[in-house]
Amino acid sequence: MGALAFALRAIWVFVFASVPGGSLLSDPILYHAYGLRIADGQGYTSLVELPTSYYPPGYPFFLGGLYRIVDLLGLERWLAPAVGLTQALLWGIAAVAVALTARWAFDSRRVGIAAGLVLACWPNLISYAGAWLSESLFVCVFAVGVAAVTFAARCSDQDRRRFGAIVLAAVMFALATMVRPQVLLGLPLLALAWLWAGIGWRRTVALGCAVTVAVAALVIPWAIRNDRVLGEPVFISTNGGDNLCVGYHPGARGGFAIPSYCDTGETRKEGIDAELRRNSETRDLAIEHIKNEPLSLPWLAVRKLYWTFRTDDDGLRGNESYGDDDLMGAPWRTAWLTFANTTYAVIMVFALGGIVLAARKAFPRRRDAAVLGLLGLTLAGVMVPMLFFGDPRFKVPTTPLLAIFAGVAAVALVDRLRAPSADGLTDT
Image 1 (tube, rainbow, N blue to C red):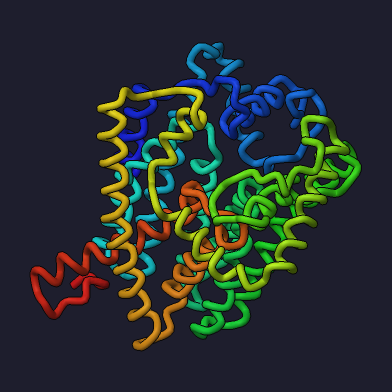
Image 2 (cartoon, one colour; image 1 turned 60 degrees about the vertical axis):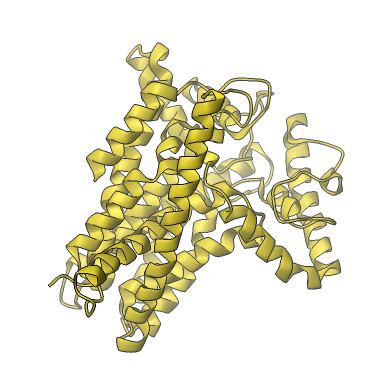
């Protein structure tokens, strides 16, 4: 399934991939600009050539390193295919990691194959290979980390391989933190799942310590860099205030909108001090609104989930730099959107069914650490947009887990059709 995931995305890249362009300062265009500056040796600097830390540094530096390799090879004219194919490779790795995770967690080779195929053939995720967005990198490192932690949960106390798996998981989660810091929200739930399943304090503490050390090894040098060039020890990025204020303001409906309430009178383009002040002021505005309207928060959280899970065509929009380009004519665009969203609806039905089956496996019969860990990470992934704001992009980091549960349900359905007494969770 790794080869299939790569091949499908390579086809998309060769047909549609292009370097972001246009007048709208969208995420793809800004990521591209930051990558160019890093490749040129200017460091992580903004469009006005001043140091910045607006986005988490993982993806800009990934692009910068890739651009540098492209330059050294003299392949500047092939920049779009180079980025797209590299990201297609990341998705191939992710598909293999998902297949292994599902196989280890549910003791079933067929569930592993089904889960890997779901991720490989998921239409919206295919289109992400051509988008200058951080999801391709995040999903890859996150999926490998989840596979490692699942293997560690399955190892016996006498199996020395569990320590290597814990170290690999820690490194992957640390890398994921530098791309999307919200991944850290899932680790306490993972630890609680392990403890509740009776996996033991020793292994749980080892995982926590390994992740802490790995995250600190990346975050602390970055904070020192920020303190040196920005004047404050920003640990990851300065867009936290904006993200909070978009989600919490008078009249908030749960989706993405930039309200006048969050207008501080200056933008990050005005310099380092403006970037830092805006981050602090928008964060304070969001907290003030939360204090003033606490009763609105439960319904607002539901609305955020609605905006996050209502559609599944955000990859195409990312390829188009959110309105600056048109990749498809009207008939083909309509066909793709219909296909992507219909397939997504089917996958989500299976994923919800798989979550129910997994819960039945993990709770009544025995407390299964591997399965409980996957359920905990999925819950954390769903909570992220509830804490900030809803957007279809925000479910992409959780898709490896959703693919696993969809694979569980698919195998269970096949087994039920063949033999009504089968539960589909183990091979016979």
